[in-house]
Amino acid sequence: WKYYFVGDNGPAKIAATKARSAENENPQCYVVSAWVELAEAWGSDAEKRQTYRKAKEFADESYVLDLEKEYVADVNFARGVCFQAIGQHTNAIECFLRALQEANPFTFCDIAWRAAISYTILKQYDKAIDICLIALKVGAEIEDDILLHKVYQSCYAALEAKCLHFHFDVDEITQAYKEKRLKESDVVNSLNDFRSVRDHIANQNIPPHMVSKLSTFVEAHISRLELIEERIAAIKNAPSDELADTDHLKPGEPPSVNILLWSLGIAALIGIAAYSTGDNTLCLGLIFPLIGTLGYFTVLQSHDQDTGKYEKACRDARAAQKKARAAQGRARSLGAVEIKELESQLHGMKKDIESN
Image (tube, rainbow, N blue to C red; front, side):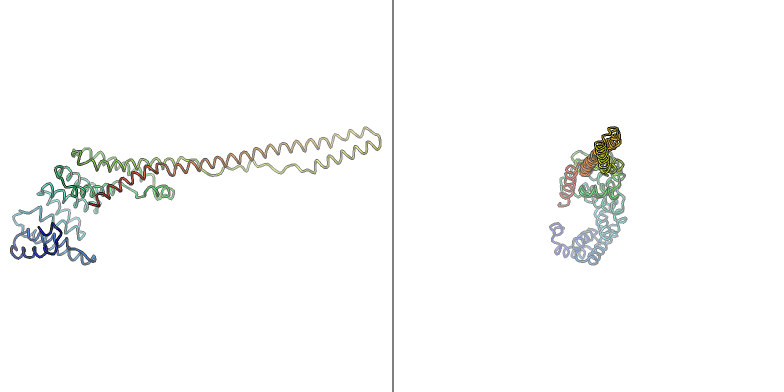
């Protein structure tokens, strides 16, 4: 153990071999041998798996030798880790649970975070969360930040696996929703699950100083999801940016200038005829070109008014489109700064744990 705990695995392996030779009926000799083999696992996956199986052989030997059940916690802890290493998580959990029954608070926490990993892999998220919560309650007096961080890490992983039904960050949310890869129900279900877990954690009577990090983690997720929910609602309620149809207001062709020219021509001919003949009664004929001229200008004025209305409608439609696009832009980026900050906070919490 002396060599093992300082990471000097070569001497630890030699010492373990000598211990097995000297006391080949002592379960603890095989327990330490199993841990040393686990620590020595390296190389390809096949090489690691072979080392893990060797470790399991030592752990199984300790299990058989512990006839008096004096080392239940140590033996089953080692076997559980060996089963976990070779991917047999159901067997690993069985060993971990037996070990927990006899474990002291420190070992309890060390076993619990590993059991939570296996539960999470088996998609038994509630059990993973609960065993971490029990560990935080049992380990309230432990002053080992690294060990407690591992408990938090396992609990965080289980919480996100259980409650978070999508994995898009702040820069992907809008596009994912637009492409229907993110559904509104995903956000609602995630929110409901995190809120349910928040209530569950609050009811466990865990000392506040042990649960504060978990509460912060859950609240950050809830705040982030609420902002995402607001963004999706804003996107849904944003006005359409489709350009309004103004074709029905488009005026027809303006009156032909030929009407005016013909009216003026006729009036000129009548005037010349009346002047040449001296017959003033011919001037009565001027009423027809006058009517034509008035009709031309009346139709032209109406056309100009219709054109003005059409141009105004087009300007209004473009202005409304521009306003709608601005509203959509605000909706698509709603809460971007706040969501990014919360994601950085969550990432930082997990990174801080992983670094330990």
